[in-house]
Image: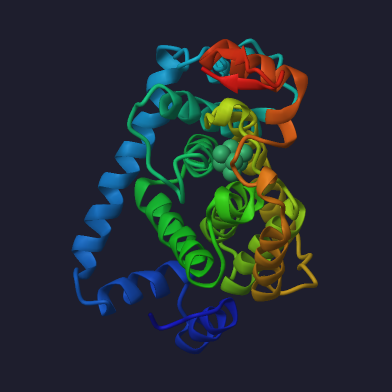
Length: 302
Ligand code: SF4
């Protein structure tokens, strides 16, 4: 790749007078496997999978395996239709669509890991809300997609996107940081602004643990996708107003990863801490998987 850090990416963009999406497109071509048109064609197809992943559960609400999720995206969309929403159409659609994608994921439907299945609602939620509310074309979304891909690449290269390795701050955190940069670029911001929105996004989610109830990627995951979507829009809005984050992207990514490494394993997708270990979380686990008292009086899964 032509860049291995946020600093190098911004330097490259400024030296060449190009956007982050263009830098990512060139980097993909330089890898030698696809030409420009093939990369864009792949992005177009991926965008269509994303579109379906939020639309299907909105039209036909989905109950998740175990029953934790059941048409939450549809309820939010209905509230917006009824003119009762608090957050305005852009944010309400972003959170409704992001939650719908998680319903699709939990029902074993097709989603785009962006960057993971557990965080697959953030980007489509924001992108398609932006398309509807700001009239963006598919080509503009694809540029946002490539911009997000550059941020995701830096996460994968220099840190992690896995809740099991560095907590939800890495997983939802990556999706939110990728989307924040994309929103800035799609709104005409500079590469430096886009990465600054990512950096602020990372700082907002530092320390977020991975604690899925019953070990299923459902709760709090669905709510966290909604939060990751609204965080991305918030950070983009701050930067586009002219306020930049103080700590650069690379430093924020590095500190996020260090915090993740310091997290106890109970808070890294083992379902032994956080939400999963609350009395209610344990009740859901028992309801879904069953439990029995062992001889030493401790509960164990059946
Ligand atoms: S809580 Fe864990 S499994 Fe759920 S979205 Fe966050 S990182 Fe993924």
